[in-house]
Amino acid sequence: MYHSNKSTALWIATLISVLLTVLILFFIFFNSAQDGSASSQYSRLFTQWINQRLEILPFPLHFHEHFIRKLAHFTEFALLGLSVMLTLRTVFAARSFSLPLLFCFGVAALDELSQFFSAGRTPKLTDVCIDLCGSITGVLIGTMLLWIAKKMRYVLNRKRN
Image 1 (cartoon, one colour):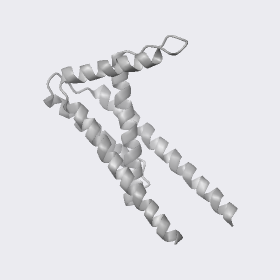
Image 2 (image 1 turned 180 degrees about the horizontal axis):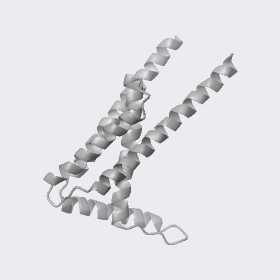
Image 3 (image 1 turned 180 degrees about the vertical axis):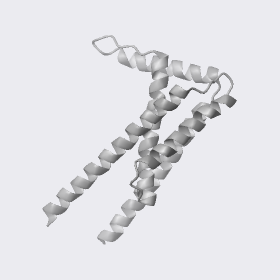
């Protein structure tokens, strides 16, 4: 019975990590396909939304659109790094740190290259660097979460025995 539950849990984790990776990839390339004016308008609206939420703070905090755009690059690639690392771990039992980073670097390069074909957009090497930093962060977070889960399983198994 335990083996069946473990297999089901692994299958569900694999499915979730693969779907999450596909959704993040879609999100990244969908946003890159937007023309320059649409992308700027979306960033402007999102920045305004963030800044309105920050008005409740007792101290002044205001973000500029440029910062929000770069933070979005970092965040979406941190999520991609995390999901790719989990996908490679569950599907292929790959424990490599470099494979998810290589994949994310390829996505970042293709993402920026695709902006050649979007009106009003220009690819930037700095965005690839920001994307790679986000990917490294995501892979590190995933590695830490798996390490914590492993330690928790160890402690729970010791308590059972």
